[in-house]
Length: 94
Image (cartoon, rainbow, N blue to C red):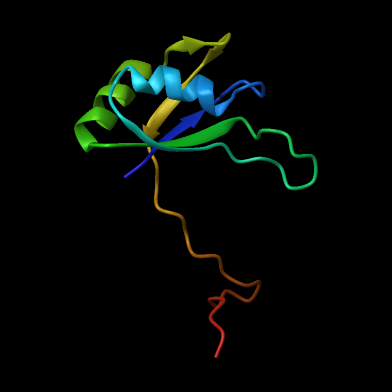
């Protein structure tokens, strides 16, 4: 499972997130998406922790907290949806 963190500062780094989430347990992975064209951070990230209990503690503690002058949105990440083509069909190739 992973955690979605929204409303992040565009100045955020993996080290910043690692420090904050490390207070709630072992951080396995951090992913900070960047804009393909500009390379700029998009304002959200995903964090995976060692156990679901650690993730739950982090979510409970950090959702709504103010960090770097922003109110964080922290919750369980939703599974990535399969993209569909313009005609509504799935993008499965033969």
